[in-house]
Image (cartoon, rainbow, N blue to C red; front, side, top):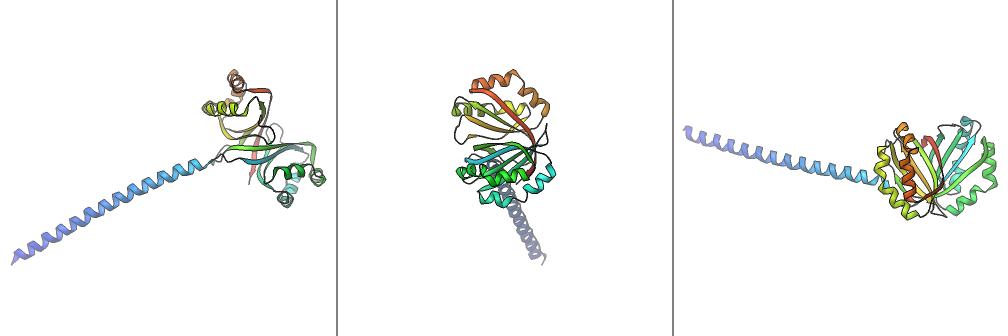
Length: 244
C-alpha cells in the first residue's frame, strides 16, 4: 500500500525539479536580454549626443552697463527674436570682464537674421537695454556640436582664419585627443556662412591651468601652422549662465 505513495512522491519531486530548471532558464534569458538592451540603449544615447547636421547660429557679443537690468529686459523680448526667426540657445558672461555678454541664437533664415541685426528697432532695443559700444555679430554655420550632458560651463570661443576649411577640419579632428589631454573638450565648431575660411570654435574648459598652458605652448602653434591657421587668433572665455 505504501508503493503508490512512494511513486506519487517521486513524480511530484520530478515535476518540481523540472519547473525550477525552466524558471532558471527563463530568468537567465531575461537577464541576458535586459543586459543587451541596456548596452544598446547606452550606445545609442552616447552617439546621439553628437550633431553634425549643419545649423545656422548667430553669435553676438557686447558690453552692458548693468547686467541685472539688461537681463530683465532681454528676457522680455523673446517675441521680437521669434518674429525674426531667432531662437534662444546659450547666454554667457565673460570671465575676465563680466560686463561682456555673449548671446547665441539659432536662425531659421540667415538672410532675415542679418537684416534684423541692421534694423533700427534692434538698435533702439539694445540702447534701452543698457548695451554700451558696438555689438559684434558672427553669422555661423555650425557643423559639429557635442550635446553631452554635464559638460563644463566654463568655455572658450575662438575666432580665426584658415587657408582651407577641409584641410583644417581634417587636421583638427585628428588632434582631438591632444585637446582632451590638455583639459579641453570640443563643444562646437563651424564657419562663417559666407566664407568657410573664417572658423568659430567652442571648447569646454575642464582644467583652466592646463588649458592656458596649452594655448601658450609651442605645440598648439605647431598644430595651427600644420592645419593652415593664418593671422590673429581671437579668444573669448566665458561662463554659461543660461542654456535654453
